[in-house]
Length: 218
Image (cartoon, rainbow, N blue to C red):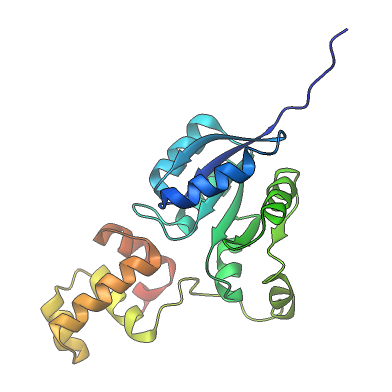
């Protein structure tokens, strides 16, 4: 009589830093109950892997090229609800965390956590629960009654103004003239925006501006 074996928790890793993925894979490979079945270095590839492989968990960074983790989490939550999203990030801002959770993520862990806590987090979300790093859990609980976060990216007011202008198709010279700043400053803000929200082109920036309600304002 053969003994039934429990199926491992299948995982896709998504992070644009290869060293980070290598470190996580090394941690996970020590646990028989976990199996990495795919890796992606940008949000779009991560989404493609989820569509193809249907992992139980996707462990995903927030700031990635081509599609950021917030947008990817929203799509996965809506289109592939059986795949649980666990966010991995360096940011511990509670408003940032709540914004990602509102997008459909089931957990949020920091990159400096122990291997044991990471494994616990993966198992928790895979089994239908939620998990937040011990460093941010108490802060989230304390802020639970605050207003819903509108901006999970931590943009400054000036960056929001520049983002809205870019989304409306205004060239750098026009943005600079309207805001009373130099063209070089506009270019700097544009670079900062792309870094913060993980977008690489105007179409993606437009989507973020729309998501934040910046296009409703004239």
